[in-house]
Amino acid sequence: MSYRAVIFDLGGVVFPSPFEAFDEYEREAGLPTGAVRGVIRTSSETGAWAALERGEHTLDGFFAALESEFTSAGHAIDARALLGGVGRGFGPRPEMVEAIARIRDAGLLVAALTNNWSDARGRPSPNGVDSMDVFDVVVESSVEGIRKPDPRIYELTLARLAVDAAAVVFLDDLGINLKPARAMGMATIKVADPIDALRELESVLGFPLLDT
Figure 1 (cartoon, rainbow, N blue to C red):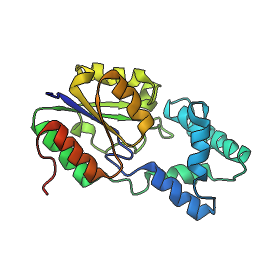
Figure 2: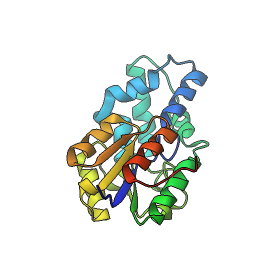
Figure 3: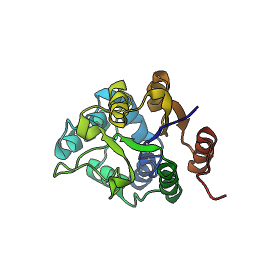
């Protein structure tokens, strides 16, 4: 198969997973292991986190709504501190940055497709990169008002790339986000270990992305 584009999730793929920040907050706040992920997973598409990523909340509104969700679940949190931990030390993984450069050098298009949020000034959050010009296309949930796994945000990304789904490889760290892409015809790679994922991507694309 001759691929024309690769789509990267950001948090958990190009960057460390925000789940790492959730786990760190739990330890610092003395919450039960898995409490943060559990509440956010339970509320799912109807909850404060999803609404933030669709651009439906101000930050202050989000903090109040998320703290209310946790109170209902029997936990007290500082939502501002939790969100702040997600962006702290959120530098890109060097091996992913190098892989993106090699993919573009090989003549393929590269896109970022991310669920993120806007800051108090309405700017997209640090769940991105300082210089987005490493990507040909950037699609952000907080800008578009839709988020993964809604199929519409994948369709939008394909349209902006001007490629068919069958000519695309998509990398994400969450299976729920890979499922719609796979159903549309994209090749998908679940990212648990970034090096393993890039090895798999090398095999799919047919050229090297890592030095060793």
